[in-house]
Length: 390
Image (cartoon, rainbow, N blue to C red):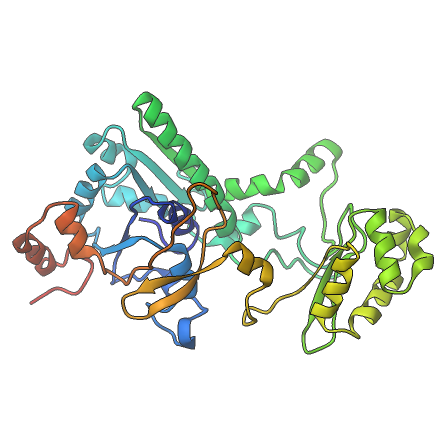
């Protein structure tokens, strides 16, 4: 019962590795992720979101209305079948539906359940609903991100949605291992903000121990210089360059024709950053980004062209099999992003992404054993998350 990005992305990893994941949806309240660009064929459609497809690969979609007594009964029976219940609503929702952990464990004592919401299940801000953009601010990631002479920009997008799933997957796997050893289920209360705060621990510790708040550095880095993105030849073309140490710097100076600068220390490079950035820009702007990238990489300098989303796949991403093709009942074969976790002996196997409600009757029949009469009665009662059948 997860929706949008943070929750479905975590259960999506498990689905690509073979878990049977039944995704509960409701046509009356479409998952926001179904309505997010980019779109297959460039057309807005609840079956056309590339992002939704990528995080819901291999899942089975059923439509059930939890506001209906009959719908809640269906969900309770699914809970008794399941190993894990996942949900990412605000704390009020599951309690209102009678589907909170204390209620569900009465039906299934060894249940594992994870609730993943912005602020967690308790505390003074628990009932504040929101998205990962707000979460990034509450996790302290907005103020340190941006240019030093401008207002904070914050990290791109709903940032907690990309951090929290890493914690969710590990927590669910640990709970399954614990139950295998002890027979005990457990409840996992995940605050997406707390999960994301872990990624800012160096800044938190620096402030607590040294009293030094991290401030905006743009693309600069505390330990590397130069460390920036430079204009290349062409319309909105750019090249990222990072010098990790003096050897990188020496090689960079040779490539851009400034060998006399090789003696500059890290401190000197920072002090002369504007002059150095100007020289690098003069060199990169005279070349296409891929040409500049190739020259620097050949010399051992970390560099990469900034890719456009519409460009052909990057060779490294192609080598890693980052994109895969899966089936959709209406669209045929379409590309999706594979999970970024790759196990050599048991690789992920993406096969399909589900149409809204595609597996409702199949799940009711094969998982719960319902007959046609009961399914028809549920539809007439409006319990299956679609319009009532007259």
